[in-house]
Length: 84
Image (cartoon, rainbow, N blue to C red; front, top):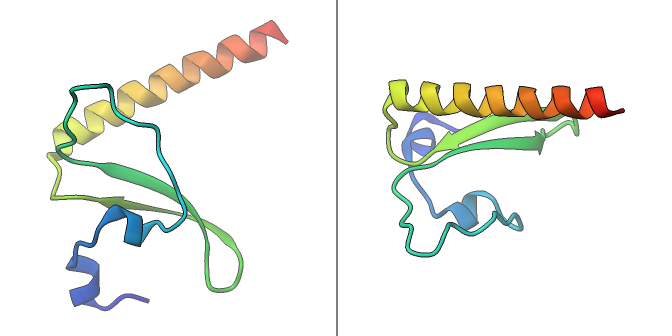
């Protein structure tokens, strides 16, 4: 378990998530902030979900982005179920 100092420390994403890759941003886009949802194995080998952020994100913006993404994912899943 991380202590309070480690929880507040920021490290490069490649160090925090070794061996994982993400899709590239569009050409000309510059990353500003990130919210990363991570599926993990804990110390006992159980699956768990965690998330990490870059700088403290604007909570309203984050909630809006997550709601929009959840709605799009829900729509895609319904369309997949209906086509089966």
